[in-house]
Length: 120
Length: 110
Image 1: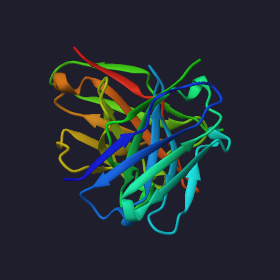
Image 2 (image 1 turned 60 degrees about the horizontal axis):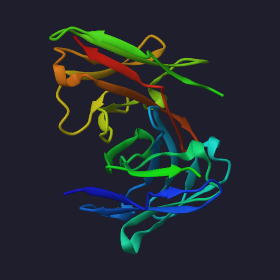
Image 3 (image 1 turned 90 degrees about the vertical axis):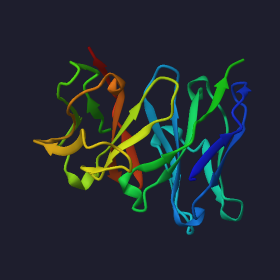
């Protein structure tokens, strides 16, 4: 069964840092681009970042202004999101999502999400 | 900055047909934006419905269909059912690896 399981979401103070993880199983991880998508409470979905399967092409939403870093470890079938200088507006559920084989098609598999709360 | 637009809310009667649209604040949507559509119910992860304009994702019933209508991407639901009541999001590929969500449409079935 294809599965994505996020972890690492916690309550963190403004200005703090956090690393989210996504454990993938049931498919050949290194052949797929992977993504983070977030959803603030009561708001819509927002694409955050993506990383290609093996040659680490990386893309970010303009709104992040260099505070977030996506990475992956294909040996561990894991995706990560390092979040620095966190702000209240980063409070959201963060979803890990697998790209279709053609990455520009969007995402075909989603995790259940992990909740990040930024508050003092 | 280009914004992806969707109707904030729509309603449909059970058994009816409804079309949701996905446009651009500037310009027209074409197949080269590879529009995709996602369904989300409260507290749940999104579910992929349509990708590359009109290809149904695995397991999605043929009541859901996608197309380009005029200058927008469109998602049509025929024979609406109570459990179609959800939020629906479109996504457009803007090039250079960038994907942008629309604001979402809250669909009510009543």
